[in-house]
Image (cartoon, rainbow, N blue to C red; front, side, top):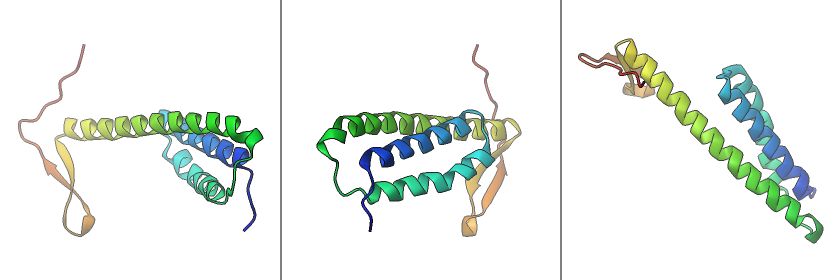
Amino acid sequence: MTDVSASDAVLELRRALDAVAAALVVADADALHAVQPRVSSALVAIQRVRAVPDDQQAAVRTEVIRCRTVLDQCRRLGALATDLSAAALMATGGAVGYGPVGRTATSNLRGAHVEARR
């Protein structure tokens, strides 16, 4: 297995996570799906890092912090997308749950309503 530059590997991961965040911001499922191989490739590259040379440690540390920040942003955006989808479904009188064999089951909610914030 070939050693990979730690700074290159973590930089590519951050760029891939930036692409994930950008896709989540505009709710572009195709772009989100398209970036998945890039994220996987970046994670494989990070696994191949054997050592971080002294002269790269500060740069790698900075990029790792950026990765954590972007990953947190992705988590928040993903949670927001989930909440918005659930709210839209509730507004139409349904709720999503998992039924037998993992299929999505829709059930009507009677008396449920959505309140708008002002």
